[in-house]
Amino acid sequence: MERRAIRIGTATIGGGGFAVIAGPCAVESREQMLAAAHGVRERGATMLRGGAFKPRTSPRSFQGLGWDGVELLVQAGRESGLPTVSEVMSEAHVERMAASVDVLQIGARNMQNFPLLRAVGRTRTPVLLKRGLAATIDELLAAAEYVLAEGNADVILCERGIRTFERATRNTLDLSAVPVLRERSPLPVIVDPSHGVGVRRWIRPLARAAKAVGADGLLLEVHPDPAQARSDAEQALDLDDFAAIAEDLERMDAPSLRMRGVRGAITVPSDDPRAILDSTKRLLAELVARNGLRRSDVVSLLFSLTPDLHAAFPAQGAREMGWTEVPMLHFCELDVPGALARVIRVLAHVNTTRSQQAIEHVYLDGARALRPDLVREIA
Ligand code: PEP
Ligand code: MN
Image 1 (tube, protein in one colour):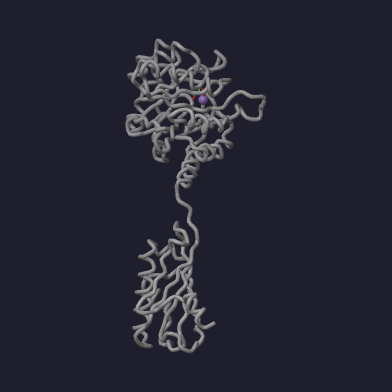
Image 2: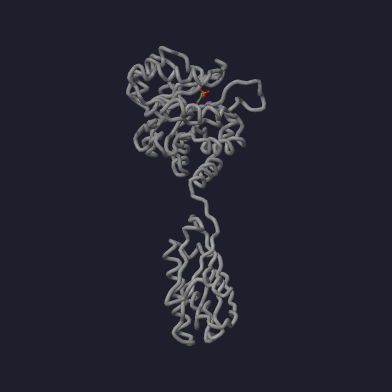
């Protein structure tokens, strides 16, 4: 199944990348939105969120700034260069909202508001569809079909936690929905751990888990001053929390480094200091080049020399190349009859993403590896 990639201005959701939608639960003021927008942008967010029409459990809670809030979000998006996401709660608002923001969010409480789903389906603005509080995966997919059926193909599915018997977390973040949804639908799947757990300190591990389980992105509530947040303050990340999560996510992309051993050897024309140092430098340069290493990848070097070489330490050659931090050690080899004359051998430990089989050992100017067939010859 070919995965759907949705282009939203400078951002893409689905199709291999990882989208990070960040911003406050609710738009509260111009200063708050600008601080949030620039703050999350600098720390790696790809899109900006902010609720202007808020679906609050109690009518006495802050309901959002309405169209003034939309305007503040749009301005902050423009100034920071981030595409914007905001919730649309009513059919009557769809057209104006679609003309203002880059993604229309359908909140969990409206996942089965069928006239609203059809209305956003008639726009050509991407839709972020949140899973209902007590909706099954089938029901979420069926809700998405209402949007698709009206001709809008750009639907992003969002797991945001469901209501279970568990009360320790705000909701139960159903990460199993991610692989199931990805198997059943080509639509991008993102995860909202903020509403999923509802507690600031538990968001970071679940953000990592969401990425590990195959989500196409995250939705995170971030406030420049969480203590002042007018809604969902307990789950609001500050900019430092957000930076830590963004770093975690980036680190997960880095291929893991392993330590590997690289062998090398070179014969030296004469037991002369310059000859020893120059040969050492050539050997090390070749070892690094053939294995795509940087100097900082070299962990340590062990040199051994045949007993006929004592005019200089090879380490001096390495130091001349600027390898000043690498620990090194020398040994004098056994004087085995028939062994090659004037050989410098090296065993380098290096950090690399290559497998040990892909490591290229380096033998120059007639030097050879200690080959198993030679060992057998003696026996
Ligand atoms: C939100 O993301 O602003 C929100 C209200 O979330 P949900 O609809 O998932 O509760
Ligand atoms: Mn919220």
